[in-house]
Image (cartoon, rainbow, N blue to C red; front, side, top):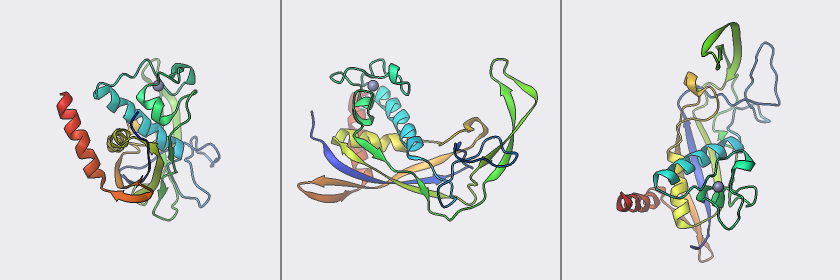
Length: 223
Ligand SMILES: [Zn+2]
């Protein structure tokens, strides 16, 4: 196995449309689905949602590059890799029931101060019949993208140089966060701002673009 390098990445998310990430701890009058807010009342993207999105795109990328993803189908633990000696590349990095994760994600927190969530109206759709159910209006909150423009967070852990490159590429494939995607919510652009690698006992800054260049060259070789 290639050498594991301790790393830290600074990630910046530009929100393009209003964001809906369902919260569990809040209720509001006449609102069916509230959004997640932090202790200061600001909208944010929880680390679990952040990690989930990155992992989904990492898996897509691995398939596109021809890696053997076994029969691994997260997030249900019973459908994920169970043999620690034969993990798919995603379980090896992000963890599985039998394997601790090598990457840790912080919450993505807004640069902006708090703002009142907007309330939107949706019409319930019965998935079985694919028709609009009469009278099934529901109200849900969203974090307004007119106010919340930028979220930042950190990803850190241990990875090989190849995994790091794939991780950066996977983040750039992300197009949205949260729910109500079909209604156009949560569209976002993700950029890795800076990558820090611990090499020979010292932390050195690297340009993500340079690391991605290696992936470009590698993927052209396999095509
Ligand atoms: Zn797996």
